[in-house]
Length: 210
Image (cartoon, rainbow, N blue to C red; front, side, top):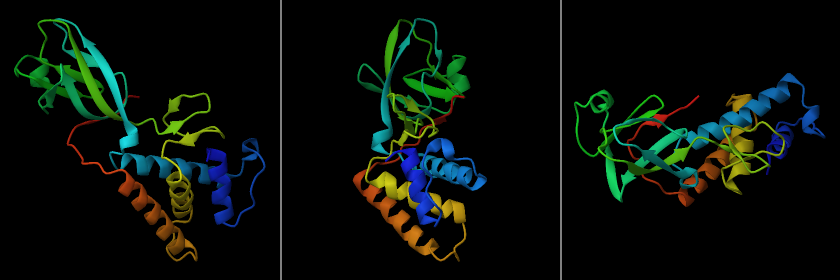
């Protein structure tokens, strides 16, 4: 179900009239709903290490250079060199300036840091992407902005999570007549997704590249 279809589902839940095209969306209340869909999508995906967010990247490290710009944005799960896990340390500056030695990596802002290598190396990085939407032309993107864009939350969970979660954000009033129903449906859909996506949380840094 794409962004426009989710939008119309939310309209109907809120007892508003559906619109015929994405280009016809111009009212402030409509824009509020579009924003709520994106916020719901982002909040859910950022709240847990979902297996479907997992990606892999290769980083070539050359002799003598130990600081590299990360080629992605997301939450690093693990780093490996020749099949051996590289340990995370919060002592990034010590690693950067040669005051810490060993099989470690650290992160400062959008850069990953290793012990200064004596030869070229290849590191494998497993991370959780923060590209939370998928475009019609096949690209992953940070947010939904076109009618045909879809969330990377798998169906059938995406529909209920985004529709009911967005309704909760738009109304944000527990005394609203349908608030309890929306909340129940949202929590159930989220619980079902979690049940299908078991994942232990690892304490490693969050990276946001602008």
